[in-house]
Image (tube, rainbow, N blue to C red; front, side, top):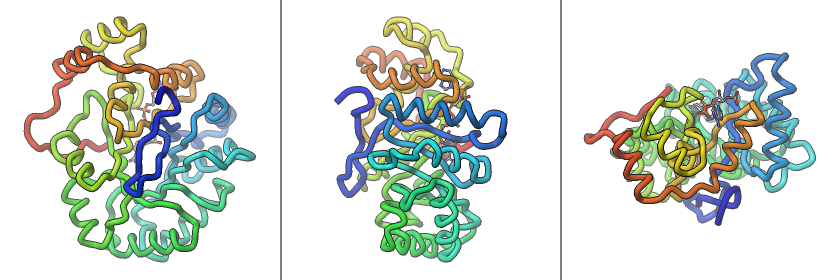
Length: 280
Ligand code: NAP
């Protein structure tokens, strides 16, 4: 498969798009809303089939914009949203999910994530997620910013149905390769790589520039192609600028060669010892 047809598999075997549209920082300023909606709409028009959002982004504003972009085309789009840790009690997740559904103007969220670990017992959050799943309000649930010890605790808390872990992963942030990636692979839990472009602060690296030029691509495209080199890693870059969006979509057509990957490894080595997960 190539381009936007590329998929990853959830633990139950469902294939979901490997590329999605990020929405952090959207919905924060009224003056930018039209451009943000235009970017999400353009992404869907071009064939992107996943959107990542959260109740936190713009305090609901990003979900509202995503809801507008999804109007009339909800089917076939994989919608991911996240609950704040302080809302992740059994009752709290139900209430937060209802608010998110309203803003997204949909009757279901495809993947609902605990945004990061908070103070509510994981067993309560899991019970809340399972109840939402049973009621059909969400189709899958997962976590975000969970390191290996958190994942162990999640399993101990009954969270064996976790469908994904969304974490910081890009060329310069490879700590997940020292433990978490292997942990997730054992259980077939895919990774969603957030900030795959380091929030636009692209590394100034001769190795990256050289490989970009050899592939007729930009450094950002190489970063995305690199993160998406694994068939169990989804990438969710955020782009409001139409040129960025077009570039990011085209990156899914780039297949890096073994020698490209070796050169990137040399320029951006993964930590040698087990290292705590990078977080923003
Ligand atoms: P990102 O996708 O790494 O970077 C976004 C920034 O890069 C924006 O400033 C964007 O500018 C710029 N950009 C986009 N495409 C570019 C390109 N081709 N060339 C140069 N610059 C480019 O950062 P992110 O938004 O933090 O992460 C992506 C998504 O992951 C988020 O939007 C959110 O959905 C999710 N996320 C989740 C968590 C979590 O805790 N679970 C944390 C962070 C992010 P323009 O907008 O001007 O185009």
